[in-house]
Image (cartoon, rainbow, N blue to C red; front, side, top):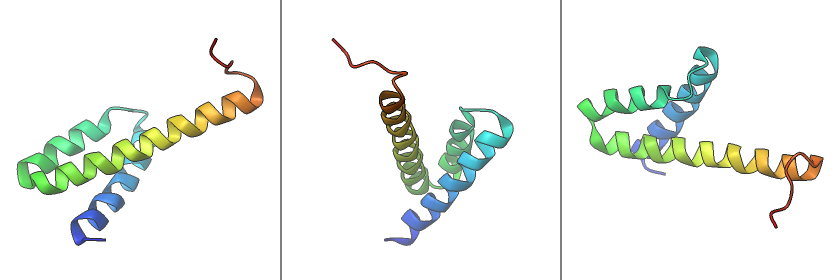
Length: 75
């Protein structure tokens, strides 16, 4: 993994923790804006890392909901 990816991964993890602490699900956008001013390369890697983690959370919540019966099968 390239250094920029490692930095982005760690920053994404820290940002998700901060989002929970701040109760602000859009905080990552502010972090990305700060990154964009300094490094668009790191900004892009960070946003990818954030999106992947948020998508994984959403998918896990869906799976849990289907198993527990709180989300019904479409159709």
